[in-house]
Length: 410
Ligand SMILES: NC(=O)c1ccc[n+]([C@@H]2O[C@H](COP(=O)([O-])OP(=O)(O)OC[C@H]3O[C@@H](n4cnc5c(N)ncnc54)[C@H](O)[C@@H]3O)[C@@H](O)[C@H]2O)c1
Image 1: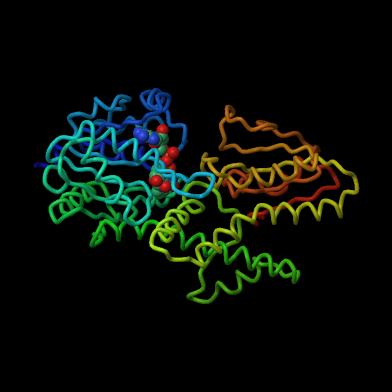
Image 2 (image 1 turned 30 degrees about the vertical axis):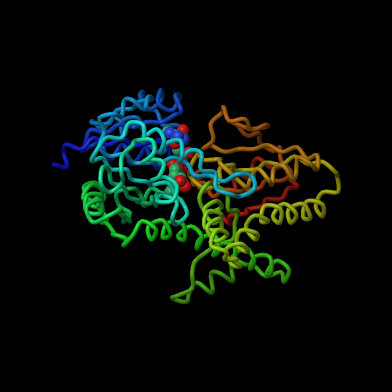
């Protein structure tokens, strides 16, 4: 089939699905589908609540249309799944979105179609869970009537230099035919090139370990932070010095929230359990990072007690998203720090220029009062805070104040 005749469906239009739909929509007839009716309503108007894309950028994708009914994807021959893969409260994989999306695709899948998964999963999930569902709901046989593959996404929301088309893309297929076809499709939009993984499991494993490696490296930096705090040594000075060695890895201490780094390790841990392997390092990394919000809060509390003898103070937490320069507040660890101080009856205000007014965060400030706060915590390294500068931020403080710059912006 001529590449131009492809009709592509993107299932799930979030941080991963929308950029993909936009890029494919510049070349091929593309259908962006999401179960969230509001998301579709806004996207049709060119509005992206994730703030990753401006109105005119979405509309530059001339062949992209947004739809909210699965039936509207009936004539597509390529389906790409970009739905969330979160975890339950007990840290086990919550596969409801990916299973639901798979059933829906199965219900409209036609012969010779291709289904590609991009959601982050554990090695084996595509073939052990998704493909049997596709076969059941479509009454078609994989690698005979339809084909499939896995291609993980590596985008980094808020990072303008690493975007979909300039990040090398890993692809994998169910057989030679599908591998070749998947490579061709992605090659037509990815400028950075394609890495062909030898199997779907390899591609799945590669994605999940990229994030686990980051989790573990941050955990190491966090542990160093705790050690050096006790020794009254500045961790950032130590890291700066160590970083002058060519092979020292540049990781900083910090909160690990969000839906990837703090979640994906549990996907591999789930697989470990299935194969009866007990992980030591991955589990330890998770534990260290999960405890970090409490550690920071305790440290700040100790300093507050030393400085202000009074029981209640006015605090401002700057930054609420789980990472810098993006609007995503899912699993943000900043909320745990806020909770800690609210529990101790301090007045806590929150300020984050990236967060929408309508998010249900109590004491969320759109404008800041001057000479008002006893304590400011900078929790997220937003560019906008760096632009404000330390002096401007200190204007919001009373004369006697403490500034906790958790991200060492200044
Ligand atoms: N955000 C990132 O930085 C990033 C990077 C790489 C990989 N990933 C992975 O990509 C996947 C998607 O993540 P995301 O951040 O784009 O999620 P997201 O929450 O931003 O977007 C997912 C979209 O899918 C929709 N959706 C949910 N269930 C659906 C269903 N059954 N049918 C149709 N639409 C459905 C939601 O309404 C939402 O709009 C996850 O597996 C994630 O781990 C995310």
